Length: 138
Image 1 (tube, one colour):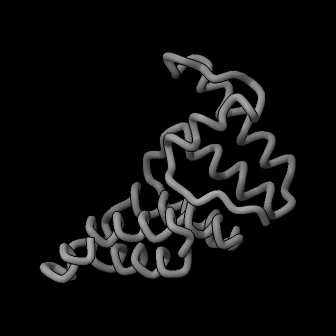
Image 2 (tube, one colour):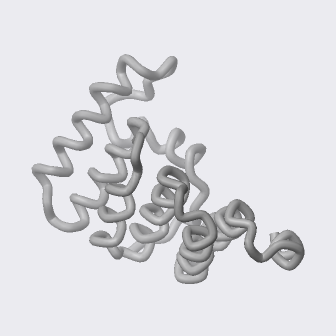
């Protein structure tokens, strides 16, 4: 990734993937820096960059930034509701968190080929496969 950026430092996609890598190895501040650079190079991305900004912000417990990032996504997929639920929960907005999570589960039951289940534990494998991150305890 560093070689790709050395060859073309304006490559927004390479910056985004480098940010994902940095986050996965436990460097969320450096990850957010790369994702913000990607956003400057591609200000028209209204999906992947805000989604990744949300995830990195949540890792850093910057939930106001996380909620703002999710709000930028122009055509959100169902998983975005989980992002809102997690962000709202960290802000102490539990009724909003529950509403977002309930909406996610309602859609997922009919949208997914294999529905993991209604319990939080049922989804652990799904989320580990969907997003790379280093497990940490706060």
